[in-house]
Length: 448
Image 1 (cartoon, helix red, strand yellow):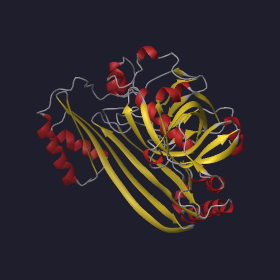
Image 2 (cartoon, helix red, strand yellow):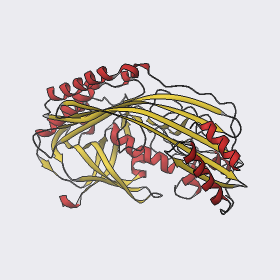
Image 3 (cartoon, one colour):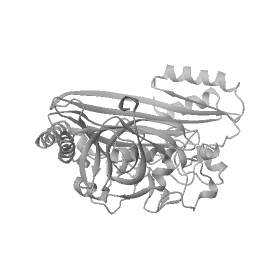
């Protein structure tokens, strides 16, 4: 069932307002195992998110069953519940800020991409092996998403976009060693498979020659694009989110707009409206045009992301960040501005001098989101650098620190941001390697 039909059924059921977003994604995954492209899998995912109001009461639901009977059951359930709800004190009518237009971010090469994808996977594996890896695994995922928006005001829109993602993890004879990288893009040509394979193989080969140790303390740290995108997207979506600002879940407030909140080299932008970025969209769940929102510019807080509900509380206009629903805004694609560092490993190690290089991270957890107290596990290639040279592989270490350290101690970055994404990142990101000073490194329990 399409979005317009869902809205018509909702109004017929008795709701005052109705919005429906329907998305159908057709995607394929080429699995990689033991240095070979092994098997293609194919999926079709479809879902609808629906927003309903009646007498200033709000009800939303999400379903993957788009049959007419299933939607009618959901709507009748919603009608029976909504009358028992309290009026929403933050209710705002569904309105649109000016005219709205859509765009597609579609690469037609997806239509016959299978052979090219197989060739690109082979390029990545061969490049990794040539640098010294022993075994490679991963996946090349690609597909197209078609989206439909409809609401009771008569606004009906549709758009589509392609996505491509290659993730490779390389292994050595030592079962404790691995090296990983991932690239994403709207176009197949965005994926530099050979370059990715060379990077993971080189870093693995480098690590295989080093002894292992574990350290604690504060270090200068170079974070890869995977790590930087992971951590700074969490900061942006938490502290620079109007929903959290209004609920005192962020230490920032309206009074901080225009004030310094980070070191001068740091610029953070949400690229929601850039068609070339994975995750971007022309229109949000409230029918507003999306925009590229500069959150921090040269260390100065520029804006919060908002939707209609939060913008009304801040006496402003929505930034078009009702990205995944109607209650809370969200960024879609984080961009960190380029810096002056060279991006080849030896140049980065020389700039680092004495410190830690972190290739990847996962399992980020929080003690206090308002204070930004977090811990994340460092994984794959983690190196202790001394006098510009890799000396040890670090095992069992975490970054355990605060958001303020990442904001205020940000020093510089490489000059070419990379579009990256893998499953443990919150949103896709276009980010460089970054250098942060005095980051707290701790040992995991097993390493003590």
